[in-house]
Image (tube, rainbow, N blue to C red; front, side):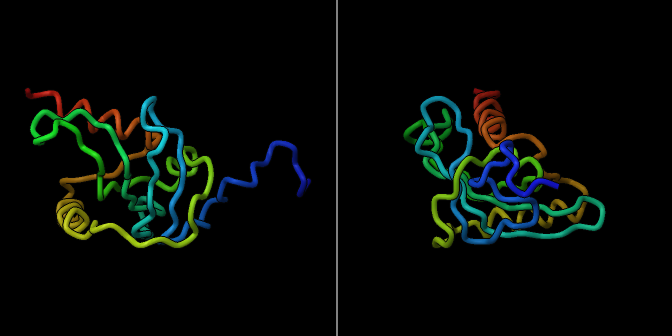
Length: 139
């Protein structure tokens, strides 16, 4: 095993090295290059593996039901560890203040326990696209 592989990326975390409070740059959509994500909670599930709960900040999601028409943050997004690993580009901060994600987490957790909610297993930029498509589906 070559520890100095030319294919390794030192800015990417290896699986299971994510920590609550980290803030990451990720592969964003065009126009959202300043967007970052924060890890707010990490849970292990027997049937699903490690689930990372993130907040995504500095978004430009078109949302006609909001006063300004733009969703600027998604405070609770459950995502698989692998999907997150494939989305991040560079660590911005190793420890930051957490946004107020608890309300969304509790609602999700209750629905998840009732088999009424899931988690994302797609890249973060595709999650953001999904949020925008959903917000604009029923204008």
